[in-house]
Length: 211
Image (tube, rainbow, N blue to C red; front, side, top):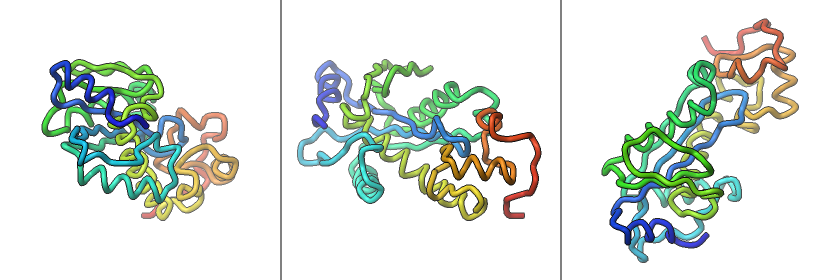
């Protein structure tokens, strides 16, 4: 990844606090969508090497980078929107909401925001979307790493409460084994009902959850 090129460009145009924001978890059948926002320091001596699109990194590398990002960041924030809200307002709006909340949680507040892909957010500060930003822009890549590490850890915790679906392996995504489990035993409380209509007959055969 090219180091902080976009952030420095906007800094040179008068924006001193440039945040990158990204999300994970738009596609899974279960669990929340998670967004992170990060303001990275621009000083060369504080640059974090190895930041990239979180999907390109190993689990160990992501976790190591996540700790470095948290230590070095001027500010960072992580927000989630749960499955009930996803079902209510749809995944695109839930994603926008998670990203907006993460940005608004930053302290200090950014004066410019960079987003991945083609995502326009309802925020009061200027913004710019960058296609494949998680692989091109350090702060967006950092946000993708924080969001993924957070969500993967969360889904591993859910796996202990709902052991039938392999959440520790699939993070809620629609793997063959996950879909077969839904068909055999029904759903649990963190499934997105609007995502599993093709696989679920509407009957909760057992209650796969802690009581």
